[in-house]
Length: 489
Image (cartoon, rainbow, N blue to C red):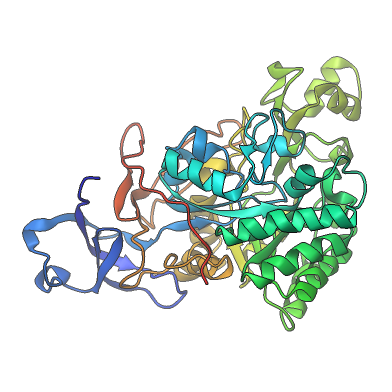
């Protein structure tokens, strides 16, 4: 491997990821670590580094921050298939947390996956162990780092012949053995997707038993709640009790109050989060949009909300169109159109902006994209989630300070997900760093044109290598220096 350059990021506003005050100064990257921080570093370089060794980046008027950590992704397979990871690196993201919503590539091998595992691609499941998946990531050498959760639904597929029931005692034991092996090989925790049919039949006790294994290894439990609609309060209590009984920290995934009947209920759910926080370690993540995205589901078609089709196997020609328009053309109602279009995917405009704002401003909320990279017409969050937080919710809406916005993407996430030596700018930490223009950083991806790189990201460094340089006519990945991460102990 060629020797890496030594980068002096000079004269920027240093936002260190802790949530504390920013300060003007420089950051020195040497090898894969942060070598020094302070003002006027050119005049007082560490021993062994000469001015002639430096590649200087003029950061005047720019922010120097830790690389962003995308806490909620479904990038398990795409980091292998497209290791350039341009949709993420171009946002300033340097680490992705995979395996969310109960869906992870490992530990499961099958020639043709079934829903909801198809969110990661039908033919992606080739890794019967976490060790195999780790080896695949290391061989692909993506442009960013990968931290993996293990999916409860994946464990069910790997051990059960039917998923419309609770697991037997023997099946629970087998799931536990698989999860134990994954944790020993560095997985960061367990995720569940009890909302999905293939996990809905699992009682809380089944998940709690697995969460206890995670807790023994110092991991976390992240959950796509059993319901984000009418019974959301009950689902939140279930998640809280599961994690509390197991002794594991809890992350409530993409927190939302979905469906018109539930709009405004963050006035109930967020105080419940605060109440649970008095007895247990709890955090949230959120994407900064009013539409979610998942597979086509008839139960989500209510004739009220807008639904944008992101893919359909039997009718690929409808991709990018509204379900209501397709149903009108076919002379059927939307539920019937949904049935005809399956298997497929869609964006569901099921949230209220006021609820999104309350969640994103909450002090326990981290930022995640929840992008689906295998969709033919993806939700714009895949390309734009992180810059959108700065453009809309910091600069325009002023819901929090710049330092708090960065903290939600960096230090808070690294702490909650047990990611070592990242998320903070400090001497000796890994050199995952982003330089951006606070005046111009913004998303450009839209529901009509979702695959569009953000603006305002100047440089992105991953493990000390310059992975991305903005301002080009055609954004491109410069280096692939990402690593498979292991859990902090």
